[in-house]
Image (tube, rainbow over the protein chains, first blue to last red):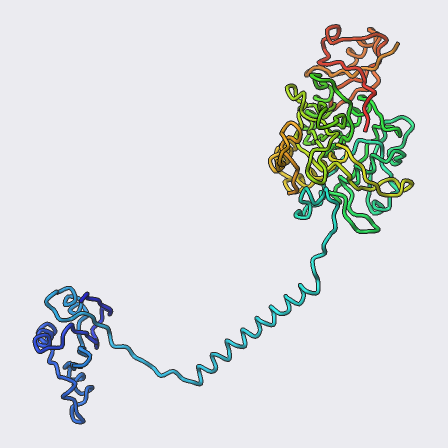
Length: 423
Length: 68
């Protein structure tokens, strides 16, 4: 039998279990511990167990093979445990057992049950409150859902986005509670009027919120600062000088994002403009990210065309367009001239995109183009900048690319790092 | 015929009175100096190149074909 022990270092009364309860074993125990053992069979009214133990003798309980010994050194017991000739296989110090008070037990249960009742009431209240105030489900346009905007807690707060376009309808009711600033770089045309409508639409996607009538959300960074630079005339055209002038102005104003939903087609193997390269690079050095539309010159799948100017500059982020089925838009330009820049960096929703439109043109409309994909990225950049205020514009660009997801069947040439995703 | 150019000044070159005089003497009128970019918007009566005026890193004609 394997020997075990349980006890302490103080002398006292011990219960000792023997391997066998024969005479030889009892004799050995008497010798080892210098005790005299009385069998429990010999106990009587006159010879009670406590009389024996108080006399420092031991009692042997034959049926249990146990000896109760008084005033024994635990060291001796330990020694006998490791001695293979000793009959002792286990010992344990005598314990004091006290009767459980039923009354105390009932009190204790009652106390615990009261505490439990209290916790249950708290839990009930929390569940009730949750049920009374369900999290509002915000309906969103398909493009916002595609970029995971329903997951984000960021709104672009504290980040200024500058839209370089056809101006902005400052009287639009969706922006009645917003402060919008701007400047016109088109002689004779005001920045806060948008006869064309394209600029208002782009501004709505980047920094709008939701429709007043249906509450459906179409804007990405509703708390961003919205800045307008009118660089395209009412007929939707513009010049390098007005665009570069506006970029210079936006950098001076320390705006963080410049959104260019515009472009000029380039030929095969045409090199990027050094003027725009300087503009993009200077913006990045000033912690400002310039984002531009890849262009709409393609007729896919047979005729993809190269990324337009200025999106083809290495220092300007280039955006392609996809549709609701996450396919490349048939018009979206690709990285055909990628050797000198001219590649696509990311893609974003750009087909049947709903946004605000000038009041005189029915307030809202669906438009398609890389022009619509671009403000998705611009609004998203504002969210990233809010989320990571310590990062530079260059790092934000990198992070947006890293978080973009590739799309099945679409190549890097057409969608760059993939579909942008909210942070 | 008049041309509008955008001229990117080389790093270290600043637009000052000397440069202004030089440009005027060569029939170039500075319409605007974009300070943060160090770019000049210039009107010239004739076509100009960086070879003729090497303080420009690049000279590009103002494109008028940007659109939505």
